[in-house]
Image (cartoon, rainbow, N blue to C red):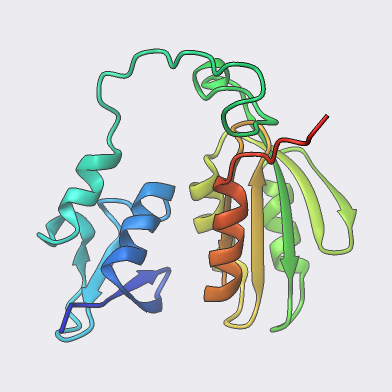
Length: 188
């Protein structure tokens, strides 16, 4: 039987997750080498980088000497509403944060969002935020204010990235499929 892992974030555990899911989390920046994980069969937590099966996931996502990507010909390549990461490395990112609070009051989450930078509530449970944090760091920070039933979805409009919490496997699969697809060419 292949191993499964659980992840500890802020004293709460999530999972179990398969190796394929852990690889996706590492590629998205949701799982870092210092993240506390445990194999479900032993339950001992330690840094993800110390698990020999997970270690290659972090080596694969570390930036190697990257050359500037060549621009894609017109009409090809993934859609992008943001700028390249190199162009915005020193600028704050602009986020859209959407929550569905089922466990309790939204006040603590909203106060935390406003503490992280200039923010505006565009809808009762949706905010626009400008912050120096990465999308993964923002997610990890905000989930400390959520309950077990609460949902969170964050879009980094500056760097064209997304992250979420508690969407469920079907929603995660569909969102990932949509976000990574190339735009459909329309016939002229």
